[in-house]
Length: 180
Image (tube, rainbow, N blue to C red; front, side, top):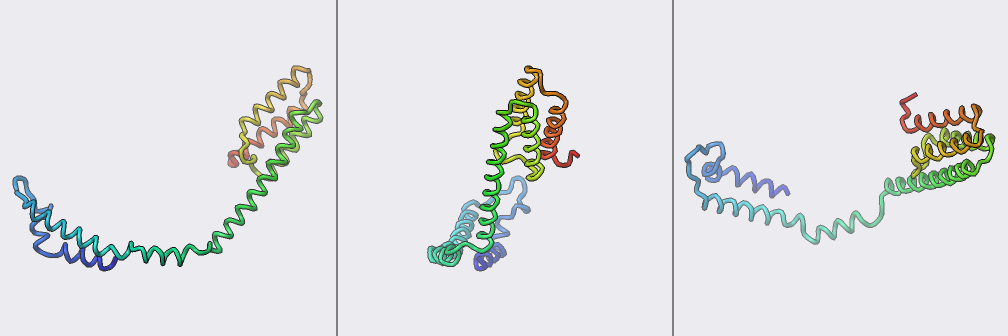
């Protein structure tokens, strides 16, 4: 690569090349010797290609492959291990969330709904975010549907509405933690 840059400097620094075609010296109406320009450009291009050939040779590619691609680095292995730990933690969190959410769906009394909402809020506070793949919109839709069904039966009093509203605020706060 160093030889390439030296040849470029040598070609561009010759008086013949720079004086025969210099964009700053061209004025309207001047004629340019196109054949001389094309010849000099082709010489320049050919020298650049021949000088750059050793950097992309197959032997260098094999050397690179043998030197760098045998085993992963320690940093990569550590990142992979951290990712696996995080994935296991998220899978366990999602499974626990799904079981509590299923209890909420099947709740038949106000006490069961309150217990499910408080369990979901405890999980949310512990992990500071919804599980991966869970949308707050879907959760709100589920809670609104449950609330509507209970109100049609004549239940869902203030004792259920307070934890419900607290949970909604906690979910929104987890999405945008700076909205305290």
